[in-house]
Image (cartoon, rainbow, N blue to C red; front, side, top):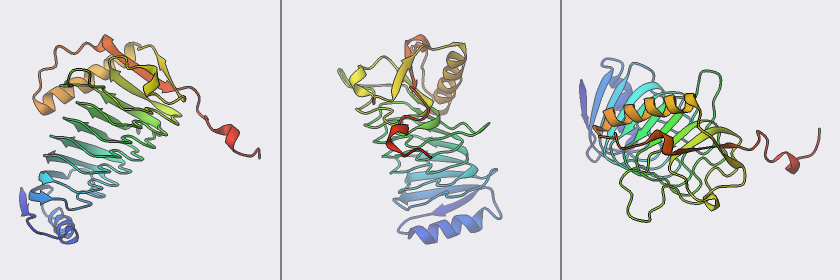
Length: 245
């Protein structure tokens, strides 16, 4: 394993070192990371990067199959437009996590900020997944076109909501799974609550089990039948805003 100390290092220098390192060693450890941007951008499969500290914006942007593990919190836009791969965050994450994400999986142990999963999409076998252990802020799944978001709502304080407002606003594809049944006012008008089926139960179990294993959590008290599922009312919610061709 190649170890790089990122102390007081400019983000471009750090990313150049990572690019050079993976030509020789596919397993990289980054120590003392403190806000450097674009770490892990475009990394291909068979590369593993462990980050100790707080990576800056756009970590794993356009990632193409690598595994990125963050031992700490992360800033905004992690997994921006990623294609394949896996991101595991042992802390909280900021806004726009998984922006325009096209494939792969992201697991966050704690809470996430606003507009998580905005513009997520899927194509054939590429179906991205975001799993959040705690709560999510406003506009979760905004303009979502595919994939799945799972919010477990672990360790919430009394009367604390699992999501903010405007969840799934503009949604026209994909699904959102929430542990519980939030009030309707939390959702945009483009989302509708539907019943869980057997495939949903299997899907949730697989990802909850992986979350528990990744973060060494005991989640036997989570009842999958308590989850609610939300999908788009239709695939073209804003058709009336455009001229006919």
